[in-house]
Length: 164
Image 1: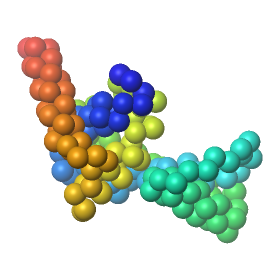
Image 2: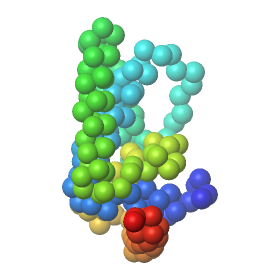
Image 3: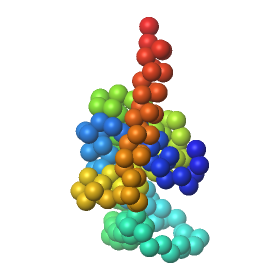
Image 4: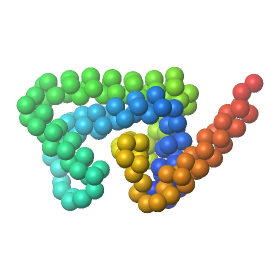
């Protein structure tokens, strides 16, 4: 899978998230995971800054600034406890979403790097598509949906042969 192929990456991640309840869980908890990870990273000096102009970059920037503010207000002794609680709740919700509603292991078990990089963008694209009908370019949603359908069907067929 090409690292920069938006359709393939989105289809890979979306194939693990077809249940509406699991998608809602991810929309609620992916960004808190990201936010609290940045909250911890606040205490690690950054080697450089990268400028960017996309909505995702703005959300990342917002999370970075907000986590810096929260970290400054809470201090390390309390911040790591907040991070721990939010991470535990968020990750538990993610696994419950996959186990109970998706009935499929999370994408991170098949491709951990791709899953962590794609999750915030998948949630953002999904929300923008649902609320505003947004597509990065015309036909994106239809094409990716067909790719997802193929991936999900292949996964079901593979698992059907594994069952006794």
